[in-house]
Image (cartoon, rainbow, N blue to C red):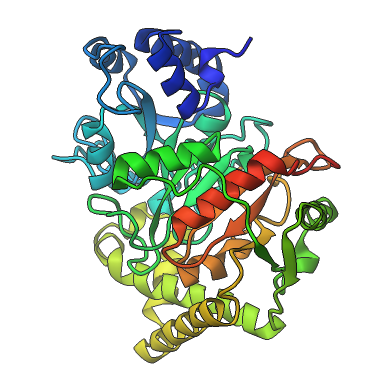
Length: 429
């Protein structure tokens, strides 16, 4: 029998509405799981279970205003929270207490969601890792920068959690931890009250167990009613990227097998030709934009508290300070050109199938892994979803990345829902 803490957001909502269990039982099930696993996974930076319990006790299980009323969730520690310390993963902001919640946190709380705690982020959502470990093997990275959110959902300590992505900070940890990850189109959700890293590329993300949970959350936050719970795609573009040879063999086989299964189901699959150098140039353009913008958005920390910054972050800022505005403009032009090509040449593709990461989560905690397979997609700005897709050679999770057209998030999520229901990803692993 499934434990309550194992349930998806949608399953919790259904069970509560049916009277199968109470909000208190949901909370206590998650607490028991946290007490059993947090000392190993270390997904949280701030927890106050008694404080949360008091909030849960004030909500009537049979009188919930929305589908997330009374359900605990995690908040990546770059989003301001008025009741929780927010340190942005930085020694500079230790003990920092914001006066109000970030916009998305406020929206979720207004809908009845309950913050269970703050989840670990890398320093300023960049590469210097936090303390979190991969719940499937504590000697391996959970990815970054939304590592605590991904690990907490994967380890059944939360039904859903907020993350963010500038390079690969949702897609990579979701793949490494074996959960569903969603990176929204740039501008789909307000980021007021969240730490700015790269002002043109930061996007909101979520970690959940089921694609249907993404539809539920978009309905709560945006009032979007899904066109279909699951919608079969007509045509999918397979994108090997110029870095295909850097994928491990299991990941290559996984994506090839997924393509074959999709074709057998009646979906047209086409190869999207990505000129090798053009693809590399897009990754370079992403790095240029990111460094340039970070050097501006985090200038105050660099100028006034440099001794409290990691070497990685200091180097990023210093690289960005050397980039000319002309080089920055050229990177923006490359971005716009790539988005236009997808929108025109491949307008009839419902989505694109590609890799989430080079393979399984690397061993060790000093690195969060390579973001290469998401950089170009994040540069373009469209939505991405990672689906769990079996295990690799050392029994750690693998994922596949599904990418949609800019601002076609609901279409992508509906297609991803169909794929999750009908295609046995990773069944041959």
